[in-house]
Image (cartoon, rainbow over all chains, first blue to last red; front, side, top):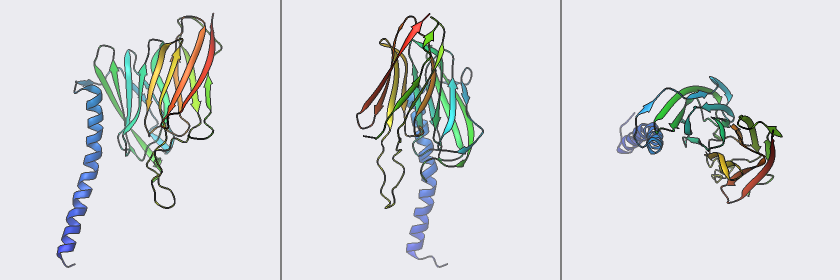
Length: 138
Length: 109
């Protein structure tokens, strides 16, 4: 292969784009987490995230979060084009600080849940879900 | 406005004061994520329900923010606790400004 100026440019651009894509996705997850926690320390006890290990269809993946004493719980699909999935805010009449719903996953990835406790501390858990068919229209 | 949006809520008719009971909600909605493209390669604009709330006589039970990663026909299951007889109000807020509501009466024994 001959290294013309055009080829070199294209290769450089391709490499940059490939390097930027995952970095950008990760950055936005971090941004969302930082916006939610305000940069506070995050623990790992007291929050349960129930998700299937293998989801055949990424279009509807049932998940359940439970954190006794939480004010709100945020769920993130870290590998999706838009990582945010849902935020549950529990009111005074909530019977328990738990909820379940169904989310879309673009592919095999980590699902993350972060709970804000009543005392202002934060708890985070992550679980990997393997997806055989993606759920973002790709 | 999305067509045929129909909320479905399952709440027990009677409850015991101070005891938690499960509520299941489902609303038919396409939840267009804004990521998909149509046959000509144009992006189909995002159209989702972005917020769901459940209140009992003005007091909040749950307030949920929904993002495009929520599946078609959003299903939410959670628990509530009520002190007396009253009405539960369920509200869904659509991206296009529409608001869908459903109410259920609960008797406390």
